[in-house]
Length: 232
Image (cartoon, rainbow, N blue to C red; front, side, top):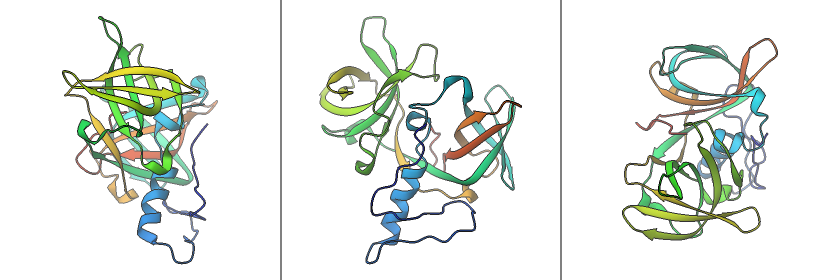
Protein backbone atom coordinates (compact mmCIF):
# COMPACT_ATOMS: atom_id res chain seq x y z
CA UNK A 1 0.00 0.00 0.00
CA UNK A 2 1.35 3.42 -0.94
CA UNK A 3 0.70 5.75 1.98
CA UNK A 4 3.79 7.84 2.74
CA UNK A 5 6.09 9.72 0.41
CA UNK A 6 9.15 11.37 1.92
CA UNK A 7 11.30 13.65 -0.28
CA UNK A 8 14.87 14.26 0.77
CA UNK A 9 14.08 17.67 2.21
CA UNK A 10 11.61 16.32 4.78
CA UNK A 11 13.39 14.53 7.61
CA UNK A 12 10.49 14.12 10.00
CA UNK A 13 6.97 15.53 10.21
CA UNK A 14 4.40 14.89 12.92
CA UNK A 15 0.98 16.12 11.85
CA UNK A 16 -1.41 14.49 14.30
CA UNK A 17 -0.73 14.12 18.02
CA UNK A 18 2.06 11.52 18.28
CA UNK A 19 4.29 12.95 20.96
CA UNK A 20 7.14 13.50 18.49
CA UNK A 21 8.71 16.81 17.55
CA UNK A 22 8.95 18.13 14.03
CA UNK A 23 12.33 18.76 12.44
CA UNK A 24 13.31 20.53 9.24
CA UNK A 25 16.64 20.74 7.41
CA UNK A 26 18.76 23.73 8.30
CA UNK A 27 17.93 26.80 6.21
CA UNK A 28 14.63 25.41 4.92
CA UNK A 29 11.29 27.19 4.98
CA UNK A 30 9.19 25.38 7.64
CA UNK A 31 5.87 26.54 6.16
CA UNK A 32 6.69 25.24 2.68
CA UNK A 33 7.95 21.98 4.13
CA UNK A 34 4.83 21.63 6.25
CA UNK A 35 2.58 21.98 3.22
CA UNK A 36 4.55 19.40 1.25
CA UNK A 37 4.76 16.99 4.18
CA UNK A 38 1.03 17.17 4.84
CA UNK A 39 0.30 16.37 1.23
CA UNK A 40 2.99 13.69 1.00
CA UNK A 41 1.74 11.85 4.03
CA UNK A 42 -1.96 12.07 3.33
CA UNK A 43 -2.61 11.19 -0.27
CA UNK A 44 -6.11 9.78 -0.22
CA UNK A 45 -7.31 6.57 -1.76
CA UNK A 46 -6.44 7.58 -5.30
CA UNK A 47 -2.78 7.09 -4.33
CA UNK A 48 -3.06 5.15 -1.10
CA UNK A 49 -5.15 2.41 -2.69
CA UNK A 50 -2.94 2.09 -5.73
CA UNK A 51 -1.56 -1.22 -4.47
CA UNK A 52 -4.07 -2.02 -1.73
CA UNK A 53 -5.64 -5.40 -1.23
CA UNK A 54 -9.25 -4.80 -2.25
CA UNK A 55 -10.62 -7.33 0.25
CA UNK A 56 -8.97 -5.48 3.17
CA UNK A 57 -9.61 -1.92 2.04
CA UNK A 58 -12.76 0.11 2.58
CA UNK A 59 -13.13 3.70 1.44
CA UNK A 60 -15.43 5.71 3.69
CA UNK A 61 -17.14 8.80 2.29
CA UNK A 62 -19.43 10.93 4.42
CA UNK A 63 -19.55 13.56 7.14
CA UNK A 64 -17.98 13.69 10.56
CA UNK A 65 -20.18 12.76 13.50
CA UNK A 66 -17.43 13.30 16.00
CA UNK A 67 -13.79 12.83 16.91
CA UNK A 68 -13.17 11.32 20.35
CA UNK A 69 -9.54 10.69 21.12
CA UNK A 70 -8.29 8.53 18.26
CA UNK A 71 -11.73 7.40 17.08
CA UNK A 72 -13.36 9.19 14.17
CA UNK A 73 -17.06 8.50 13.59
CA UNK A 74 -18.36 9.11 10.08
CA UNK A 75 -21.89 8.97 8.68
CA UNK A 76 -22.26 8.00 5.03
CA UNK A 77 -24.91 9.47 2.69
CA UNK A 78 -27.24 6.54 3.46
CA UNK A 79 -27.11 7.29 7.19
CA UNK A 80 -24.84 4.40 8.18
CA UNK A 81 -22.15 5.28 10.72
CA UNK A 82 -18.65 3.86 10.95
CA UNK A 83 -16.26 4.18 13.87
CA UNK A 84 -12.71 4.44 12.53
CA UNK A 85 -9.67 3.91 14.72
CA UNK A 86 -6.96 6.39 13.75
CA UNK A 87 -3.55 4.74 13.87
CA UNK A 88 -0.61 6.20 15.74
CA UNK A 89 0.84 9.03 13.66
CA UNK A 90 -2.25 9.37 11.47
CA UNK A 91 -2.19 12.26 9.05
CA UNK A 92 -4.69 14.67 7.60
CA UNK A 93 -4.96 16.87 4.53
CA UNK A 94 -7.57 19.12 3.03
CA UNK A 95 -8.69 19.80 -0.52
CA UNK A 96 -9.05 23.13 -2.27
CA UNK A 97 -11.03 23.94 -5.38
CA UNK A 98 -9.19 24.04 -8.70
CA UNK A 99 -10.39 24.36 -12.28
CA UNK A 100 -9.87 22.82 -15.69
CA UNK A 101 -7.97 25.95 -16.65
CA UNK A 102 -5.31 24.94 -14.10
CA UNK A 103 -4.54 21.73 -16.00
CA UNK A 104 -1.60 21.93 -18.36
CA UNK A 105 0.73 19.63 -20.22
CA UNK A 106 3.18 17.90 -17.89
CA UNK A 107 0.89 18.00 -14.84
CA UNK A 108 0.28 14.80 -12.91
CA UNK A 109 -3.40 14.02 -12.32
CA UNK A 110 -5.56 11.42 -10.64
CA UNK A 111 -8.88 11.03 -12.48
CA UNK A 112 -11.81 8.79 -11.60
CA UNK A 113 -13.75 8.04 -14.76
CA UNK A 114 -16.34 5.79 -16.40
CA UNK A 115 -16.74 4.63 -19.97
CA UNK A 116 -19.03 6.79 -22.10
CA UNK A 117 -21.82 5.37 -24.26
CA UNK A 118 -20.28 6.96 -27.35
CA UNK A 119 -16.80 5.61 -26.53
CA UNK A 120 -13.89 6.96 -24.53
CA UNK A 121 -13.99 7.86 -20.84
CA UNK A 122 -15.67 10.67 -18.93
CA UNK A 123 -14.23 12.11 -15.71
CA UNK A 124 -16.14 11.86 -12.44
CA UNK A 125 -13.54 13.88 -10.52
CA UNK A 126 -10.02 15.20 -10.97
CA UNK A 127 -7.20 15.72 -8.48
CA UNK A 128 -4.22 17.84 -9.51
CA UNK A 129 -1.11 16.58 -7.71
CA UNK A 130 1.65 18.93 -6.52
CA UNK A 131 4.83 18.69 -8.58
CA UNK A 132 6.58 16.96 -5.66
CA UNK A 133 4.17 14.03 -5.99
CA UNK A 134 4.48 13.43 -9.71
CA UNK A 135 4.36 9.68 -10.32
CA UNK A 136 2.38 8.81 -7.19
CA UNK A 137 0.23 5.73 -7.73
CA UNK A 138 0.85 5.85 -11.47
CA UNK A 139 -1.40 3.50 -13.44
CA UNK A 140 -5.00 2.58 -14.18
CA UNK A 141 -7.10 0.47 -11.80
CA UNK A 142 -10.69 -0.29 -10.71
CA UNK A 143 -12.32 2.30 -8.42
CA UNK A 144 -15.52 2.41 -6.41
CA UNK A 145 -16.83 5.95 -6.86
CA UNK A 146 -19.47 4.60 -9.24
CA UNK A 147 -20.10 1.14 -10.69
CA UNK A 148 -17.46 0.27 -13.28
CA UNK A 149 -15.43 3.37 -12.53
CA UNK A 150 -11.65 3.43 -12.77
CA UNK A 151 -8.88 5.53 -11.29
CA UNK A 152 -6.11 6.68 -13.60
CA UNK A 153 -3.01 8.45 -12.31
CA UNK A 154 -0.80 9.79 -15.06
CA UNK A 155 0.99 12.68 -16.68
CA UNK A 156 -0.86 15.04 -19.01
CA UNK A 157 0.53 14.55 -22.50
CA UNK A 158 -2.06 16.68 -24.26
CA UNK A 159 -4.97 19.01 -23.46
CA UNK A 160 -7.73 19.93 -25.89
CA UNK A 161 -10.75 22.19 -25.46
CA UNK A 162 -13.79 20.69 -27.17
CA UNK A 163 -17.07 21.05 -25.28
CA UNK A 164 -15.12 21.09 -22.01
CA UNK A 165 -11.58 19.79 -21.62
CA UNK A 166 -10.14 16.50 -22.77
CA UNK A 167 -6.80 15.28 -21.48
CA UNK A 168 -4.55 12.47 -22.62
CA UNK A 169 -2.78 10.82 -19.69
CA UNK A 170 0.34 8.72 -20.09
CA UNK A 171 1.32 6.10 -17.52
CA UNK A 172 3.10 2.76 -17.09
CA UNK A 173 5.77 3.02 -19.75
CA UNK A 174 3.85 4.82 -22.45
CA UNK A 175 0.27 3.61 -22.08
CA UNK A 176 -2.24 6.34 -22.88
CA UNK A 177 -5.82 7.11 -21.91
CA UNK A 178 -7.96 9.98 -23.18
CA UNK A 179 -10.49 11.31 -20.68
CA UNK A 180 -13.10 14.00 -21.27
CA UNK A 181 -13.64 16.42 -18.38
CA UNK A 182 -17.16 17.90 -18.48
CA UNK A 183 -17.51 21.43 -17.15
CA UNK A 184 -19.43 20.16 -14.10
CA UNK A 185 -16.60 17.81 -13.00
CA UNK A 186 -15.26 18.48 -9.48
CA UNK A 187 -11.58 19.43 -9.71
CA UNK A 188 -9.42 19.82 -6.61
CA UNK A 189 -5.87 20.00 -5.37
CA UNK A 190 -4.48 19.26 -1.93
CA UNK A 191 -4.37 21.77 0.93
CA UNK A 192 -3.28 21.90 4.56
CA UNK A 193 -5.55 20.73 7.37
CA UNK A 194 -5.40 19.92 11.08
CA UNK A 195 -7.39 17.59 13.36
CA UNK A 196 -9.31 20.67 14.51
CA UNK A 197 -10.95 20.69 11.05
CA UNK A 198 -12.73 17.41 11.84
CA UNK A 199 -15.81 19.13 13.21
CA UNK A 200 -19.31 17.60 13.09
CA UNK A 201 -20.70 17.89 9.59
CA UNK A 202 -17.33 18.23 7.86
CA UNK A 203 -17.10 16.16 4.67
CA UNK A 204 -14.37 13.51 4.71
CA UNK A 205 -12.84 10.75 2.60
CA UNK A 206 -11.07 8.03 4.56
CA UNK A 207 -9.24 4.99 3.25
CA UNK A 208 -9.47 2.29 5.91
CA UNK A 209 -8.27 -1.25 6.49
CA UNK A 210 -10.81 -3.72 7.86
CA UNK A 211 -9.38 -6.10 10.45
CA UNK A 212 -10.44 -9.70 10.91
CA UNK A 213 -12.73 -8.56 13.75
CA UNK A 214 -14.39 -5.97 11.52
CA UNK A 215 -12.57 -2.99 13.07
CA UNK A 216 -11.77 -0.16 10.68
CA UNK A 217 -8.35 1.47 10.98
CA UNK A 218 -6.94 4.40 9.04
CA UNK A 219 -3.67 6.25 8.77
CA UNK A 220 -4.98 9.18 6.75
CA UNK A 221 -8.02 11.43 6.50
CA UNK A 222 -8.96 13.93 3.80
CA UNK A 223 -11.31 16.66 4.95
CA UNK A 224 -13.22 19.31 3.03
CA UNK A 225 -11.96 22.19 5.14
CA UNK A 226 -12.01 24.79 2.37
CA UNK A 227 -15.70 24.54 1.56
CA UNK A 228 -15.00 21.71 -0.89
CA UNK A 229 -16.27 18.15 -0.52
CA UNK A 230 -13.48 15.62 -1.21
CA UNK A 231 -14.68 14.20 -4.53
CA UNK A 232 -12.67 10.98 -4.47
